[in-house]
Image (cartoon, rainbow, N blue to C red):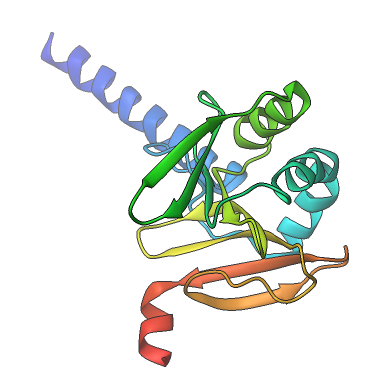
Length: 178
């Protein structure tokens, strides 16, 4: 009887390792967090820009004229813009009424492999693709044509589409180099 349990545990362990390895190697996804294990390359994000360009531009065009110094959209389930205008007032949440923009945001955050949309409505919008506690990377769009002023940016590379950049933010590297 004990032998049957040992064989069952062995089979379950092997199945777990195979599934975990498959997810990491083939999909680059951690079994535990369902987030990318490895930071995506500039080439990968250039492909994503071309693949999701229509939806990305819908969001960019909507957010470009919005008031507020900081824009933050972390969740496709509650599509709201969180503004930080004035330190005295704090955060202000505003619903988005435009269904095309809501659909684009939901698609980008649910299917488009991006996990946060944020930025400064005067300068740039950031589409974060990957992050750890102190490092992140993704796409950024510059409204002005100048380089986006992304916090703790350590790498900023223009992409083939005008106004678009690949960025890496690394707090530790930024802190040691400044």
